[in-house]
Image 1 (cartoon, helix red, strand yellow):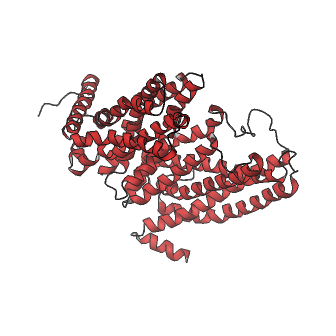
Image 2 (image 1 turned 90 degrees about the vertical axis):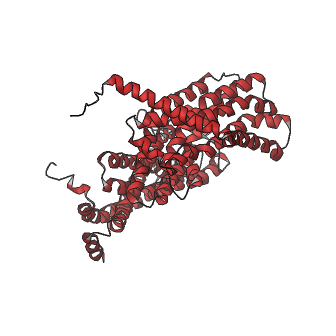
Image 3 (image 1 turned 30 degrees about the vertical axis):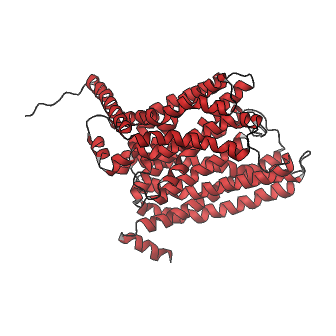
Length: 247
Length: 237
């Protein structure tokens, strides 16, 4: 592995071709995984004894909720890297991840509301996990709004990185809120320490869908980061060459 | 060669404390001399709290239920309203840049500014809260609990808010953006603060919520001045 020059890839100019090569792999992988996961989830998995077919929304809801939190952690990681090493690419990756994270948060909230109606009889309950997810959405919006409000991209990088790191404190609160407040929301049904309580096909389908969401997030972030690189490095000659290359 | 001042751990520590005390007294002095600003904060709090009975009706039971939440939300909004004052004037006239250049550590100077901000804006709310609580039918014990919760909670609001105020320095988006950045971070304080009175009413005792509020205060007391100083340096670049 030492033959790969990792630090060379920290330069947007040399990362761009790699990102360009990786996007088809991850988007194809995401499509294949999503088709498999949806087939398992919608056609193969048995109907739930209590909830009927309404439960099948977990194949979207749970992966979206996982990704909404996971992407924030990854974003905070790249923000920490960009503050520590003062690298432009890390900040660009964080910037590219934010809209996808916000999209998954909205998806988790909307599918949760759609599932809540048949399961609990209400679209929205002010329970801790839902509320935390909503706050996570505000954190994503705050991050993006702060970025957009600052004209100088380097200042935007660093200011939004500080904000993302402060907000990262919120992500563990989301996770542990299930234990802190005992409310309407059911406890986590997938845990690493005890046997899962759901059927094996349901679990498999859900995990495959989670990987599909993950691959999609990587593909779309790599695609978006290319646009960000071209836009922000437009004053360099190589950036113009990249544009010609895309065409 | 000029004499080089030897910086030991001891001198550094005393310089941090001196910087803290200096910026605290300076900002307090500035706050006291502009009496108009000093009272606006408190009046805003009182007016917002007064609006609620007018909106939802004067049913005593309803007001008693809503009271703790209303008083805490109003405290959050009042805190938000005054946040930009921590740095804005100093940023505009360039003295913030001089503070950043001074030999005293910037986090210490900023801690002094935040402490002065809390004393001039947060503490009056704490003092007024038992009286406003009585208007909402809170018992004397609940009124003291509210004041105690605010006493622990409002410094945390000022500390967290200072980060947002520093991040948005000089931006055109201004106040709305600051609310978007900071209010989500205020949420745990609101939950524990208003929850302390709920817990006391349910007979559970408020010590768990007050402990969590104190934990949040201690954590932000350490972290927020460092984050604010980083944000100020970013804004001044």
